[in-house]
Length: 322
Image (cartoon, rainbow, N blue to C red; front, top):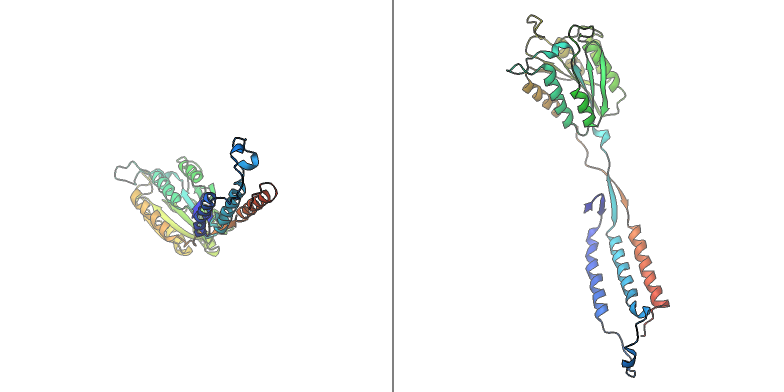
């Protein structure tokens, strides 16, 4: 029995409350004892004193005191749900932002770019990981941490919506997969999570920076599992003269770190890939845990105070003839 964090641990004791109210009603209806006296009719016109008006107050105080004690027996308490932080997964999304991600080959209409599909499906994936910290790192020639590991899904979504490719032909327009993975491993190294995972998405091969096999070995040594996603339909970009997408680096990284390589040739298959990763990286959460604070002291104190006040009133101020 709970409401707004308050609960009764032994609510069945509340069944005693109607009995207390019944006893009060019977006591009020019971005729008072009378002594044979002369007629009091001449005195009836006199105004009633405060003491006469409050003659039933001790009885009411006793009844309220008993009701408070019944409430104490029901054991009111405050229950606070404890976070399950230690049971989640820390996941770092690593997205390729080289200009080849602008290729429009993710649907039949050729309107959806690889970047658009990657961004939207990553948003859906992150929104589903309610108990996990998720972060975002993007890369072309350099690796940039866009959002640190966080439980704030709204903040992460905002960073994801702002991801775009680097300018085509610029000095940064390269694909440094190894550099990005090494940076991701460094970020996850101090994580206290039970499981640390990188989801690395790219449409090309490692062509700059840290060798991808060195970065993969680093991830394996630090216990970071890397799932890799190769995105695109067979050509690197419209200006590559049909160069096939082999994804050699991504396949080797996944094999070395104990992860899985996925091929996503359309926006729909990319959604299925993220759903599969979501299923694979579930951890069994323990049953909800609560911190319970007993509040029975308050009704016990109130009940004792009401009973004592009723006794004092009856004994010292409102006296009834036997």
